[in-house]
Image (cartoon, rainbow, N blue to C red):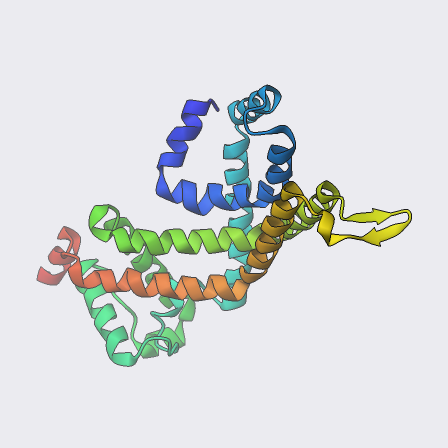
Length: 258
């Protein structure tokens, strides 16, 4: 991947925020001491960064974040019993009140042409019922792409970002700890033989590196499976709220006339 291609990928908001950002945040604590040591305009550093970019490292980090995010999502789906967009449509789930849920079922049938199972049908065959709920969510996502649904895109990006950050959390924690060690070394505040600790000797390079690494360590601890679940439910709410502004599809209209 060339630098121009990398910039093209950056223009896509989902690719940039949900995939590239988690990968770049992993290496942030490692980049800061390098920049402080060599300087942002150092010819060797500039050439190295250009080589890294041309070799597709940025795209590679995004691909790793996406891949690990998908693996995490599969595990979470098994743990949760389904995606939030599937769970909230179930009659047996109480996240949505019954009135709102009934309205969503009615609008899905009317505007998407997908029949929603009754409470009895769901109890008798939950697998088939879930297939209808999954199909409804997928059809609604396809119908809500574009500028009129910018808020929904933001929530989708937020979910993807939280999922990928959670998936990359172990790598982020390790990189943050390495960054803190690098900051201590750069500041020369600690000596092992003989051991002493002198915070008065801390340098800007070491202080900034330690501060950023510590902040990132705290941030990585926030991105837990529970955080992903919360954002997933927020996205599911915004997704089905979009039904009220959606026009009935031709297939749904034909189904209603039949």
